[in-house]
Image (cartoon, rainbow, N blue to C red; front, side, top):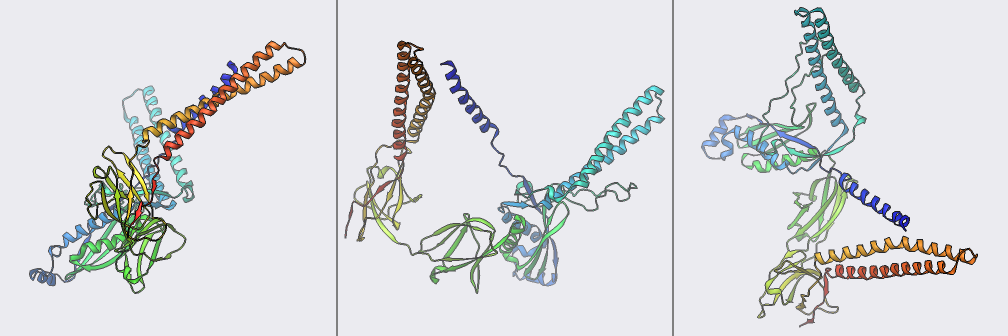
Length: 531
């Protein structure tokens, strides 16, 4: 029996150990590295300063037109504000390669400086007053430090020589603003360039001034002509200082918000470094097209109106689109916009079908009612406080009563088969159902009963095998009947216990499933149709 028990509990302990190990050490760190974006004050050029001054005196320009410096500071801030929601960037291996190359270059410069300092400290000892033995020991120690730096420098040079773009894989990084604030324009000093007059031919020289704490910088210039401005905006990536994208837009001075939104939308695809996809919408009927609005992943999508109809540019990938129009039912779908550069979407919205419902419930007066997750309010009053008339846009609809004690009751309101003549009346029963704690309690009892059944089976199987052995031994005359009867009783007892535990498990499973099923929405049909 002891051997059988060990064979059962050792695997159980191993399962518990590996479960704890997975829970503690197996969780992956899902946080993404940050990709920092900043913007500098734009430069400003006024083509006709005399005309602008005259326009200011006559009041034709707003406050924004009074100062080019205001525009130079406000426009990059507005662009950053709109770029703050760009999401993630696909960082390609080439960009990661440039970062690592810069790190090795920076490390090599530091090693060269430390090596030069170590050699200087060693040579300075020759002019010291140390004894011959002490001088020898000090020079040897300094030479050891210098040799260590030479070894590190050699490893750095080897790493730089072996570095290749193929060593890196693309990854996503979160786009964040410098100092996490769109109002902060980049003013940190750039990294100082190396002294190009350094006599060492193998000393690394950095010829460009590059920021050390950002990955991209938005720069630009504004050219003002009377009451209009032209903005030229560039996105520069670091390290390297390469201009990744340059866009231009012209707008009236008093429409800086629109100008910033247009520039930010053009920069967004470059920031995300993903494929740009254009969507074309065919909206039928035509009267619905004038009321249409589209949401992409919950955000309102700006639509371009031209001769070909409605269109929009989005980031390639899997997106959730929701299309709605006043007086029509909304429609949503999820699709992977990655296989092509253009997609044509045909939308045929259905007109709203307003149906009056009379809801009766003993708890209606002291509860809140939701239809399809949205709170609703009566469209007409009734004499009974426990009933009210509501309007829905077609059936079926998922209704939920939220009681004062926090308990929620769900119902699926359906249409009665046959013709619909008018108002549907529904009675929502409020009966006690198993709450989350009750379901969890039954789930634990069910799992414990299952565990007890599994633990009993090895004992039952072992006693069954022992009973067979004793029977064969008794049949050959090697054993007496009393020993056979004892093992038979032990086997029957264990089998009875296992059978009882099996029946208990099935009962507990049924109770758990019944409790879990009780929280599902209850299907309700109208109790009557009236003309």
